[in-house]
Length: 240
Image (cartoon, rainbow, N blue to C red; front, top):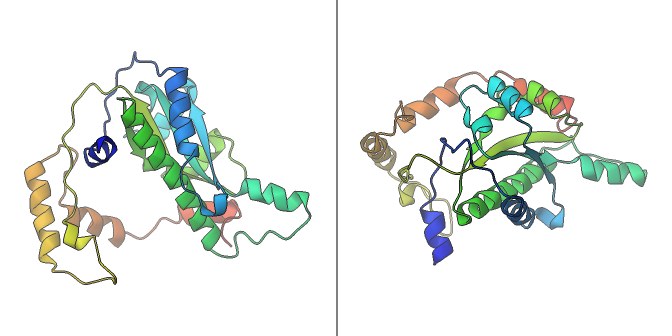
């Protein structure tokens, strides 16, 4: 029940004690927990970069200026979908490597990385610390990849800022269960549930939430993609 309570009280934090230093024991516990996450066929198609170097973290802040906590926290982790390891195996055994010819390997590696990231979030909170997942590292994906010296067949999925929080956060409401949870088959639902959620989020009134939930995603998915991610995936040999 303690774990369930922790999961149901998850909050994202963005303000951290700049002077707090994560111990080696705490960091290792987080990394070990991440590495024990579920993974397809035990493939472990991900890698984690632990970034302590403040120079690198400052450069990441410059690339993602909405995330100053990357530098102000105790440590920053970057989770990678990593199909380089299996490429090395194929090369060693002189066998074909068909990654890039289908989206499936990339989806699997992305899922593996996401599972590891979530385990890291849970472990962080179990230690009485806090975190924020940073998807913004994909906004300048080429520069981030160059900064982190990423080889081909590797994709930076998201970062994770970890530290000791200094500002208390409220638990953010989620979409109504009936709009998310289905039994036996996918079932349509009343659009009013989504409208109700807009009202719920207005009442929640978090400073960062400057748009209705519907407006936010109307804007996101009505904008023509800039093509950066697609081009990067092709360059990395993850998609043809």
